[in-house]
Length: 462
Image (tube, rainbow, N blue to C red; front, side, top):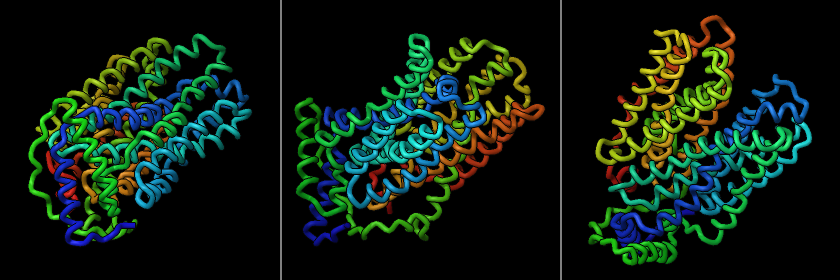
């Protein structure tokens, strides 16, 4: 619970925040990012592994194809519950505690999934695993945001978030390798064993991950926060980095205890609803086309599975290029510009898919790639942007609840697009639905989006 500071402690807390804002990127930041990044990488790795090895899983467990959608969706249901549960834990007991617990739960249940004996047991393991999986990336994004100064926060955090896309690429490559080297009935089990790495990350984080200094300041533990800030400054000096004189400390108002309904209070309702719309309209196209693109290239484009997999891997590489281009100018051009660019690029692909009818694999590939390039700019940006728009007392909670829109979209998208594809001209209707969703997101961002570039978190929260 937040401890209301005296005037002297409030001044000391404000001075500490001013010191955080003068520290450039150091080895200390890289250590934090490396610990958190393992979780971010394996979040997407694990999510895609099931899709990559789905046929082998169903064959081994003697399950029909009809249960595939439920098997995939059950993990996202767990993620919705996990985001809410660990959102509370993160605000009550700290970011570090939430990250360690989520990583341990995620990793242990991945290992349990490797020994599943039937599809029912695998569903149960994936449901529980989703509770940890749904918390890991949002809480990691919150922690890293709170360590980085305003001047370069967009570029640094977005490059860190690119590990999520690397996880997708890793799952594609490692999955293909294991399925070609091991018998199918063994390959998927070994893939889940690899997904259990976050168990080790939890141990590593317990001993080496520092608590967010901003969270410590909010809780009134200025001594622990000072120790962390001094370690960050020492790391900068050892690296030969120049520490500027601290800016004039901001007016730090005492923060009340976290009130979880405050997201929809008068002060934050507009931000919250706009962000939920951005999350949903970004991840519905992302979830749909990520799940169905390889199948579309085979069924509609009449390509072989090997060629379809290769082209899908090419799209992931393109996603990384688009993400790094946006990160390089995010702190100059701003969040609103790149959200609009991401929506615009994805919208162009969707409209192209409608007009061209996605006839032939070339049109399908180009239009689908444009959709994925665009939404893969906006997806990591959503984590950064959400964490910027709320005060410390509710930053993790807001990011966690926002991410439930991602999970909801990830449940709805594959099912909806799958139903559309069963109809005549189903590909056209899929692109039309995507276009409508993206247009809504673009209009909401242009109307209600707040520019956050190079502004301290405490200033943005007011």
